[in-house]
Image 1 (cartoon, rainbow, N blue to C red):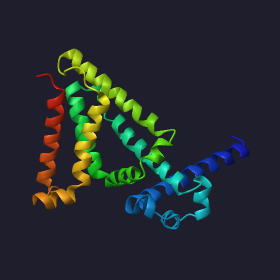
Image 2 (image 1 turned 180 degrees about the horizontal axis):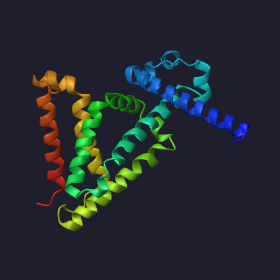
Image 3 (image 1 turned 90 degrees about the vertical axis):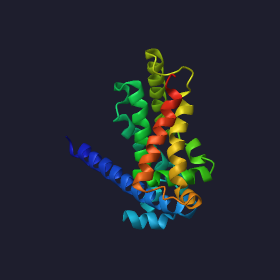
Image 4 (image 1 turned 60 degrees about the horizontal axis):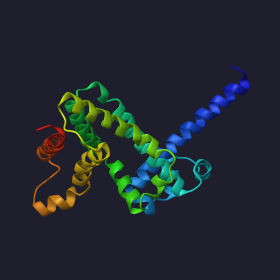
Length: 215
């Protein structure tokens, strides 16, 4: 490898590392303070990088927030790919997706806070992103294939919209976790106790499978 090419490779790797460090620091900042409360100065402090370097890679806070959202979606979709849902029987594939979504949201509360912030801004950053839709489409296509496979085998009923089904799977976890403080207070129960979380997951699986399975 020539000296010039070697230098270019090093610069590319340095740029990738710098972007990754900035995105991780920005994720923490946006998760804590939302888009409105986040500050580039604090992101620079978190990343131990010069603020000018942040603006070099991301022109402003909105573009940085968009990049963080894209990264967050990419991470959850990559984890879903590792489930190999296409290799599972339809019923197990749907159950696995429900369980994964619940556990991922539990393990990554920052993902929920990012979505909350994005929705406060009418999903403008997602709509303007050239990548988010492409990141999410394969999952919906795969879920559609699983539903069709289940229909052909006689396990599932027909006429199920994969988008509607996925929205329901996500919503059953998202609403419960995003509102656990108010719900726990209203109903006088600790909805985040191990027992309550186990009961919630069982309930979600029963609700979703009860909908898709042929009676």
